[in-house]
Length: 217
Image (cartoon, rainbow, N blue to C red; front, side, top):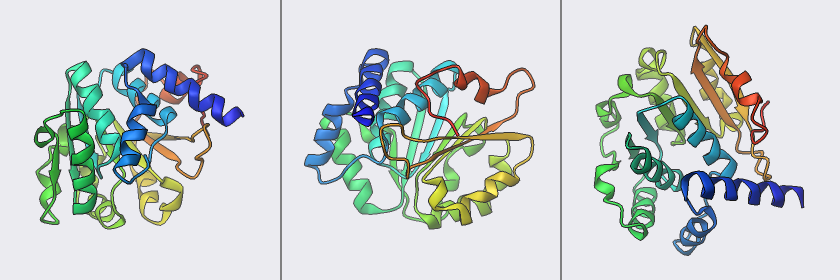
């Protein structure tokens, strides 16, 4: 019962703040043969980071349900968003989802056909990078773009706890802090890892601790 209450609570918050109807989007995604990898409390976290910290350039690696939400927010807040996908089946699925919302997906989503194509994205100008890509792409990002990642204000890694042998390298980035957010609605196996550039003027984790809608570790 508590998990359901938390789930409905965050669905209502999203609808109120962004008019994004999570439950309807989930139904559409299910009709296409998939389930979302992010829960409404995750999307609330992304929205708060983008809105409260005035982030203007969002880059996503690995497309899906989150792509729809990021595009929705990008249009609403008039910010830049790009997403890349290297697995054709997930690219096609995301395209079908976006078509339900009449989004011109070619402006946002690109299929990576060359293993180095992701470098074409302006990583160095990103305010937030969201990583929910294949293990192979995560490795390439860390190995080839490590120094660029050093200066990104926010990095979110989905499924962090199941891929620690790869993503633990983020802990080696200097002058940065980290915290974790789990899904209060029940999917605690989808831990959200937040790595951010340290700012002497405030501690971002403490900022979010004041918001009872988050579940921090």
